[in-house]
Length: 324
Image (cartoon, rainbow, N blue to C red; front, top):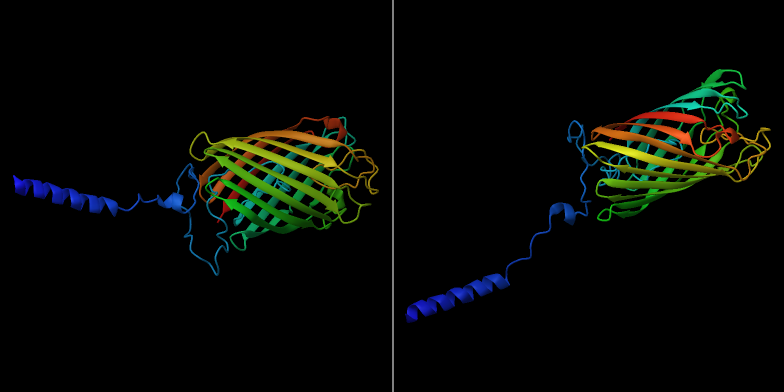
């Protein structure tokens, strides 16, 4: 009996010592790395088309990882820049209808363009957001086609919080006045600083930005302040319907074009009578992420303000994205 009591006491002591030195539970690798709780999903497969190895230096081409579960916006593609930093190519098609009672007297515009982005480091990226070719058929103007202006710049992710699913970025782009006047391009050079941010709550995501389009010659161009909001919710793996709201406000008149309508997000007309006017439009669509390196998006946009006071009738935008 005494032997049994001693044995039990010894066992309890040994167990207590072991318990006192037992390590804390191991933190899951994803949480330890600060990854968001909502993983990225895709329609046809989650395997990327390439290895994510280091190239030259940290972040080059690979950019900033951890926000792949977000869905990129579609509308206002020239000025609605996301806060994410990655490498990729985006093919764009826009069909834009002009209001029948505006100064352009109806008609339409077709734009074919390609955007490019290159991650220089994890936080710093190069962006080329405007180029392409336009086919203009406004009833008040001769039908013609020609090249668009080219715009490029840099952006930098200055605040990153992966556990909270939040990121904020600032940047700026310069637009050359090199386009063809026949399609209402080439009239003015612009500098457009911007700030953008994104926040996620599981499968629900918000992205927004603010942009100031500053003409380098105030007589040739209008100063335009723009803002954009994007909301989406993932309903199936890799599929998310979206709503987008866009607005622009003309802050100054120009001396180049005797018009009371501006160029919206397509061009800067330097109109003489637009100071104080506002254009707001709503977009509804969806994005489908087919694989980690490929997605498609589409949206239909419609004006919420008086369309006859500007050039925004309605618009369909379609894109195809390839990312590194």
